[in-house]
Structure formats: C-alpha cells, structure tokens
Length: 62
Length: 550
Ligand code: HEM
Ligand code: HEM
Image 1 (cartoon, rainbow over the protein chains, first blue to last red):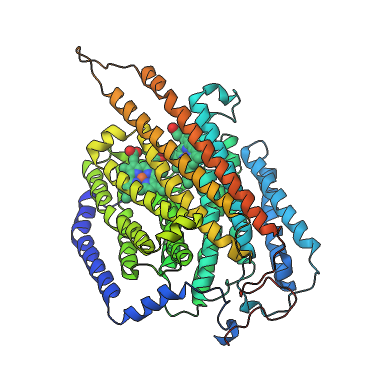
Image 2: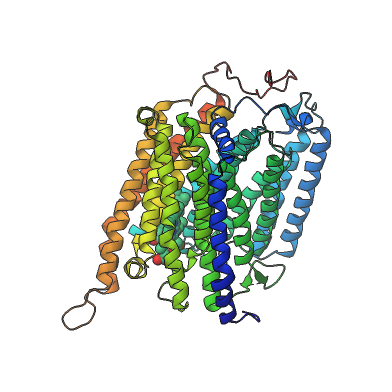
C-alpha cells in the first residue's frame, strides 16, 4: 500500500477504528430507543398499510 | 410512454438518445473488428429504436392534468416485465448449464456455447437482469408510496431503467463473444462499467430527490435498505473495476490490482455484492411488501433499525472468508471469519422480525400464495445466513470450499431467498400498479409457488449431498497414505446429483414462466374489469385522478 505500512493500518484499526465502532453502536441504540422517536416510528410503520391514495398535496403544496 | 411527457421533456429525451446513438456510432467505427464494435452497433440500434418510438409521438398532445398529484407507475410496469424477461433468460441458461454439467455433450462444441461463457450469462442475467430490474422497479414503487410523493422527474426513471438494461445486455453479449475481466460478478469490461456508473449516479439522485419531496416526517426503513444497496454497490463497483484499458478502441483492460490485493479487492466486492445487491435491497422489499400484504405493521420497528446498522457494518468486513487458506494474511482471514459469525445476529433479527410480523396471521399465509412466497423467503433467508456463517468458520470451509456445497448455499440464498421474495413482491405489486382487483389467476400463483418451492428444495438437497460427498472423497486416504479416489472418481459420483439439480431447476424455471404469463395477462386486463380502486388512475383525460386531501 502506497506509503501506508501494515503497522500503521493495524494501529489505526485498533485505536480509532475500535472507538468509532463503539461510538456508532451506542449512537444507533440511543436513536432506536430514544422515547421521543417512538411516535415517529409507530406512525411510519402504520402509514405504509394504506398509502395508495396518491401523493399528498402534490408539489405545489411544498 | 411519451404521452406523459411534456413537449420540452420529449425534446430533452431525444437529445439524450441522440448523444447515446453518436457514442454507439463512434464505438462501432473505432472498435470495428473487436467486440467493442459489435457493442457499438447494439448501442446504436437500441438508441435508434427509442428515437423512433419517441419521434413518432413527438407532437402528440401534452398531458393536461397536474402530474404531481399522481404516482408515476409506467416505469415500474416496464421494470416488472423486464425483470420477468430476464428471469426466463437467466434461469433458462442456468438450467442449460446445469444439464451441461451432467451431459457435457450439450455444450454443442461452439465457442460461444462453452460452459465458461454460459455460466456468467446465467449469473449476470439472473442477478443483474432479474434481480436488478426487480429492485429498481420495486424501489420506485416503495419510494413513492412511503414518501407520499411522485417520482422526482419524468425522464430520469426511464434513463435509469433502460440505461441499466443496456448495461446488462452489453455485459451478457460480451461474455458470449469471449469478453471478460475474469472477476466473478464483475466480468463486464471497462466501457460497460463506466456506463453503469453514469446510470447508477442517476439512480441515486432520483432516489434522493424523491425522498426530498416526501410528505412523511420519517423515512420508512425499507428506503434505508434500498439506499444502502444503491450507495454501497456504487462504491464497490467503482473500486473493483479500476482498470487500464489496453486500448481505447478495444474491450480488453487490465486491473489496477494484482496478486493477493486483487483477490482481496475482488472478494470484498464479491461478498458485498451478496450483501448489498442480493440482501440489502431485497430486505427493503421484505420490509415493505410483507407487512403491507399481511396488513399488519412490522413486528418491531426498532429491531429493524438495529439490524439495518448491524448488517451494514458487519457485512463490509466478511469478504475474506472467500479466501481461507490462501496467500491472504492469516489475521485477515480470521477477521472475516469473526465478522461472518457475528453477522448471524442481525440476519436472524431480520428474519425473525418478518416471521413475528406474520405471527397471528397464519391463516393468511395459508390462504394467500403471495404472502406465502414472502414467508418462505424469510425462512430461507434465515437458513442461508446460518449456513453462511457456519461455512465461514475456517475448518468448515476446508471441507466446503471448491465443492458443490458452496453452490448449494448460493442457491439456498439466491432461489430460496432472493427469487422467492421477488416473486412475492411482484405478485403483491402487479395488481396495484396495473390497478386491478387481483392477479389474473390465483391458481397460477399457487402453481408457481409449489413449483418454485419444490425446485429449490430439490436443487439444494442435491448440492448438499453432492458437495459433502465430493469434499469427503477428496480427503479420504487409503492405508498406504495416498488419496483413495482419483479426481475422475469424484466427477462420476456427482452425475446423479447433477441430474437431480437440473430437474429441480427445470421446475423452478417452469414456475417462473407461469408467473410471467400470469403477470402478462393481468397487465392485459383480459377480464375487462372496471377499475374501481381508489387509486390514482392512469387517466390522460385530464380529470383529477383522486379526491386527494379531502
Ligand atoms: C432455474 C434455476 C437455476 C438453475 C438451474 C441454476 C443453475 C446454476 C448452475 C448450474 C450454476 C453453476 C454451478 C457450478 O459452476 O458448478 C449456477 C451458478 C450460480 N447461480 Fe444459479 N441457477 C438457478 C437459479 C439462480 C438464481 C435465481 C440465482 C440468483 C438470484 C442464481 C445465482 C447463481 C450464482 C450467484 C452462481 C455462482 C455460484 C458460485 O460461483 O459459487 N441462480 N447456477
Ligand atoms: C450471514 C450471511 C452469510 C454468510 C456469513 C455467508 C458466507 C459465505 C461463505 C463462507 C461462502 C463460501 C466461500 C468459499 O468457500 O468460497 C459463501 C459463498 C457465497 N454466498 Fe454466502 N453467506 C451469507 C449469506 C448469503 C446470502 C443471503 C446469499 C444470497 C443471496 C449468499 C450468496 C453467496 C454466493 C453467491 C456465494 C458464492 C460466491 C462464489 O464463490 O462465487 N450468501 N457465503
């Protein structure tokens, strides 16, 4: 690998890589379980059951 | 097709086609004598054909209704039909290849019909032709419905769909002429690859712009999966296909990578093609069509989010399990193996989420073959991911690698999961898109279901048996400490399994042909039923399509 030695890459993976993956997983769990998101999720999962009535409003309403 | 375009849009479309035709002409002239020249003619003929179609209706009356009040479903219709056309081609060639392995004379001694050329026609035709068109068509359905907004653009959807099919045609016709980069699932040569990049960027832009129009606060999870599919496939495709053409007027090119780096790049691509092409996009289908058809919301929305990120982040690392016991550093193999085993968790979370959604609606699964397609697909998804995680363990792989067990695993995923979820989604979408009450014949859906299930089970069991017999024969020693069986002994032992596999494949193919007929008859509206659904109509008459926003 041009310029990047094997040891450098392993170093990055073991330091930055580890913490960013941990941070990411915590972030995702927080997002999924954040109480305020619950309403949004509930709405989204029910709204697909009946969505054939055409676009809401059309473009001009935006 | 052109009737829904304004006059200005027709002109733009015409301009794009003329540019493509000129490129085709240049390829045909400069590449004469090479496969590239033939491809030039294909590009030229395809674009001239479309120019002719469009030109004929250039001054037809422009649409008068407010188009933004209707969903744009015409490209979806064409996409579904194209998916079924490729299904028949891909499975037909697959079954031919299967018979060829049992009876090598079926190769017919021509260069173009050799196993090495027909096999990639099968894989590309079925994965990219059938799977890709189904993904594009259903994604256009899902993005509009979950956003409650019309597709962003009139020309872009056609460009994406037809441009993508041009890529598949270039790829497949190239193999027949002997063109290949020798990278599995990325055999197409450099100009076809560049064209796919252009189409793919347009696809991504179309998706994002449609989502930007959405009238729902939250982006439904199915869209996340489709977007991951589009985005990651773009990255994979570009990196793995980095190559230097030997000449700009011929098809041959040389990869930028070599040796073990080349192998690792290829299988990083290869397994993520499985992950993001054959899994993520189809999970998007699952999360939309299964709850919708069952008329029950997904069991746990939170779980679907968690498993989304789990799948996305674990899959990226597992490619090295294709290179166990090779020159690849041992720790990279171990990394791939570890992540493969962890991958089972989000995979089963997705499969479990789907099955729990159906829990309490088993009578619907029993009565409705469309829902049953999706149910069985979720079961096969669970099965093939379990098998995959198991095969990724290095000592297990020492038995399975190079044997038909791999091929069995592939088709447990590809037929049992990918193809069955696609048929389920297409049967769910077809009546909606064509505004029919139901499919033309529910009995034919039943027939298709049982043929497909029988075909898959026969195929997989044949390959499991064959693979394990093969693997064990290869490692059996006699008392003198030498190998007990010659390689030819193992080939002969495969013969009955290959016949069984080809019969299973034939059943699967017949099912797909029946499905195509059923879809075609539904589209043709042979019953002449009244379009009573409360959906936007395909009307060009100018009356408001639906009583929206009462
Ligand atoms: C009618 C049904 C089918 C038949 C008869 C069939 C047959 C075959 C055969 C004979 C091979 C070559 C195996 C070898 O080299 O030993 C193969 C490979 C393959 N097929 Fe199919 N196939 C079918 C359906 C599908 C479907 C629906 C998909 C994907 C959605 C698929 C994806 C693949 C892939 C990815 C490979 C390459 C496997 C590898 O390299 O390990 N096939 N198929
Ligand atoms: C947790 C999920 C999965 C894991 C860990 C996994 C693991 C594996 C392993 C270890 C191999 C064999 C590599 C070798 O020995 O050469 C393999 C091959 C393959 N798998 Fe999976 N698999 C998974 C899911 C799937 C699914 C759902 C599909 C299809 C839709 C699929 C399609 C394939 C294909 C096409 C190959 C053959 C590649 C080739 O050699 O051409 N896999 N997989």
